Image 1 (cartoon, rainbow, N blue to C red):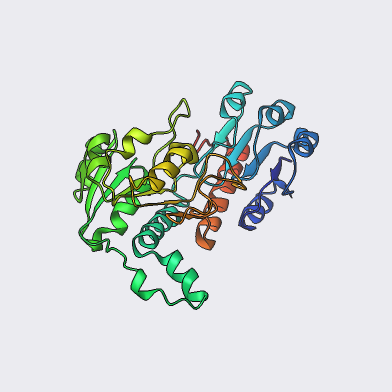
Image 2: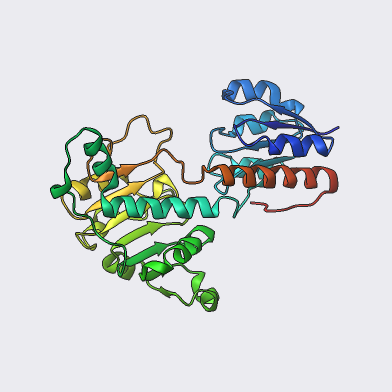
Length: 311
């Protein structure tokens, strides 16, 4: 009988699927690297979300492990290179949390434009700052989307009703343009210099360097807002903090950070920054979908050799 380890908290639908397929499953969350290394030789498959870091040491200790599934899209927490060298498959679940992430990006956009966190905080304190809170409308603004995969495309559809002008910086858009007549392709420089809102939905650079530097902020509108629900290292937080303090841009809203969990960050207490703790994909609906996808993919591979969503 095959045996699978679920090492991160997720919907119990995954456990039920494995049990239905007669695959033995253990749910052990919050384990350290050392604790996982001790038990991983027992398992044929492993399911993680973002908390577990599947390191080189874990992979090398896994004598039977054939497949690792990420219940989510990003696999930054898995040493994919070492896994491949060890003949292990790494799977993800693209699309499972697309809508959740896109909706969170839209929520951050609206929160930044309408100054909702500040309005909420001051109202709770009885300050009634009505005269000092004047927001901006999304309607008729230019939204720049950098990267146009599942999430970027979904965000572009979510904002259709606002009458926004949508610019997209993506190498893949031109071949798919007929499916997205409501967006316009733009160069990276054109997008950052003309957009009112710039939202990142792309992969990080292969070398890990940020996609925007302080020089880029100087090209942006002083009223521009940065949104990042993609990868933490896309935006250099020191440069962003400086850009906010120097009024090069008006605001930023981030859900991802260069170091997570973000217990310390230079953006903490910056009044122009809205920060959420990597929860864009965390909805009740999305958690069920990605857990179901991951469990079915591992089951199909172990029992039938079917390879789905291989990274």
